[in-house]
Image (cartoon, one colour):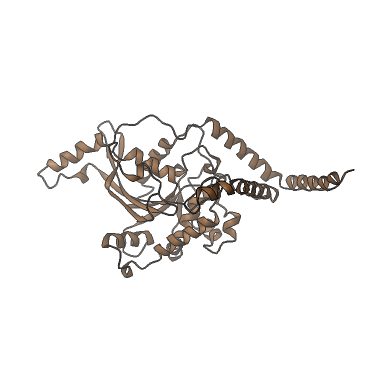
Length: 367
């Protein structure tokens, strides 16, 4: 018997014992892997038929309202409005492995890619052996950099609006809304069912959640990221509470376990996005939800993802718009507000458009 055999046999035996002991986790991750492979090769999440220019529907309504002399005939009689605040998640472990990011040079990323990939694969193997429903790749959680980005957004939200001299009155009012301050217009926090988005709003808005223990973050699966990659697949079983990642458990940024257990509403989380869906279907579902009795508030704070947000700007801004949101992504932990319009056509169809003039950077911006 060689030295290699002497040392490898007990190691293999130990690995097999760990796998058998955690067989339920192994089976769950195997199913998730099969789903991820199927989704990667067969989904059409980023492709859908070209839609009509929303301006063709809304421009005549706006023009007719402008031409009316009767004060009782204004745009509000034909168009409903909600204010949406997009909040992009902090950097994830997937981003750390596969994206250069703004925190390192292209050379540093290229040199560190293979070592970083090996590290992430070893973490994935460790999580499997330990029986944790967790992953570096699937439903990738916040990285350490992502948690530090959240601290900056949280500091911005914890400011007293009246004491920040650099803000305009409109900016102060938006900060009050985000904070959920008394006498500010009602708002609701919603989030994608992917962990990095939920963790970002849970930690960034923890001051608001602590002040009102009855408030909850509503999970909307229609906000799930638009991509075929495995990091956009939810690891959380249907209508099950989200569990903090191994990184978040040891973090002092936020008590993720407490918020996830007590202040997250999972009633709409029915599992992963189906393979026959696409981004447009989910964006339209979100729009319908925003203007439904589920979300009666005028201000909706949305924890979500870069491609989903960029696709939303592309789909619901007029086709001739050259707004930066159509080309660039909201920065990690950035916040951008917009007014979303809804009208109903004569045949009963609901149409939506972003009021381009209403788009304003609240924090961070685009890159």
